[in-house]
Image 1 (cartoon, rainbow, N blue to C red):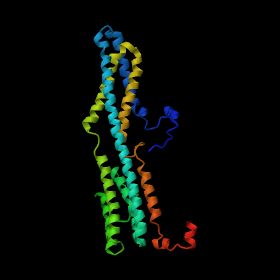
Image 2: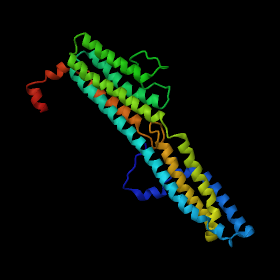
Image 3: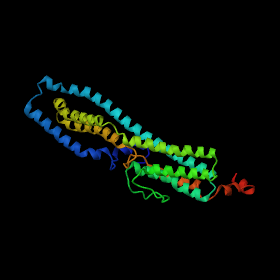
Image 4: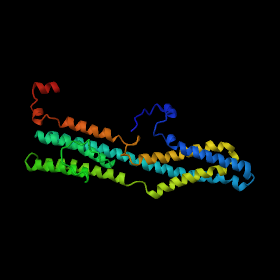
Length: 305
């Protein structure tokens, strides 16, 4: 994800990054400018269609179609941004669920081995989910706590291991029934967040809808020189290129952010979120036991207050 200062807008005009739509569309804009130049040259010098009222009024069609395209692209970009923002809210909820689970276990788990297990396993869930969403088979970021079967759904295995450990602590008398129910809700929330992320990733914009927009923009731009060349002459070339840049850029932006879990420049900062979860959970479930914290009374407690 690109970090920037939204108030320093003037520099954006002259800034071209590697992911900028201008760079990606430059070959297409160059081809369209050559096409528009050829159409203008042929019509102005050979076909002599300037006297035909029917041909001269073709530009009226583009005014109506331009309004339709604008509505379609607004809906397209809004839909893509909704998916991006929903993904951000889901990963914020994953962060909160991981912290809540670690905070509760910090108070409930007295065994250092249990605390160490959860200190490694809770962040592992976020890293496993990130790898699943990116279809990445490299799981080197996971701490080797369990012997996991990588051909199976990794987040489900980790969630099952978390709940199995909590249930074993309850069976051993380390947790009460009420504490088991409290912890169960946080583990369940992780699985719910995983399903929400998979829903966004595995349900793209309908194919027919996406294809229709691309075809509509293409034919709209390709027919612009036929209707406007008589009133604009060779100035139709930069005009067509500018219109293509505006319309195609919106479609490219929507394509990039509709799946916010990848590694594109404008995707969500999932790597940073996962490392923050590991850092915060590690701080909460450190080697210090609750008994050590509870023993700090008298002068020691007064110094902390």
